[in-house]
Image (tube, one colour):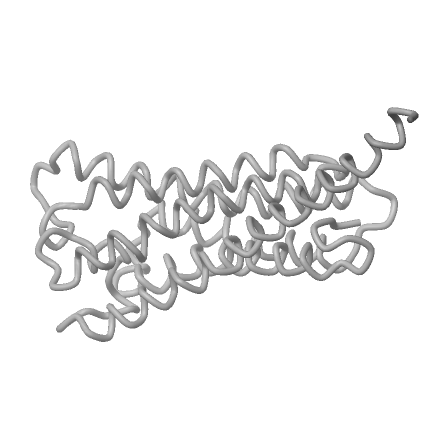
Length: 231
């Protein structure tokens, strides 16, 4: 019997299994933002004295926060791991686009940043005259996590512009990336006008990146030609 007749079904099966794995990984990219914001808002509401407009997200996972353990483990650490998984799915799903690898790597780096945020919670109330090394790691990892997710959105959008006919998803990615980047610059600058609104600006940064990740993974899953492919 011709060996090529036997090999062909095996290759088809492997391809099918690869698509299934990619689909599962992309679902992590949808679930991660939803899980993050579920914990952000539910824990924020349950924490006495916490203000979503005024206070940073880190304060609900600080050492003295009443729900620090579940927030750190599930709302930050688990979300970071899910983002890393989603990065592998995106790398497979959009590998024919310009800047595809950069986009996926930035998502993975963002997830890794949030894993370190969970491993190094900030000092009580996230306020210290002399911040501990752990707190410094926390803020650096948080900055990496937020900024790289926003940059992934920009990379995806710019990659779309490099094609002859950018689509609606490309333009949406650009808008979300620009909004997130501008909000991040305002947050880092710590202007006096920001006093009392730091939490709101941080949520704009985080929300822009998370909305992009959810949107692009959802689009990958619902492309007609292939479940895990963006044309």
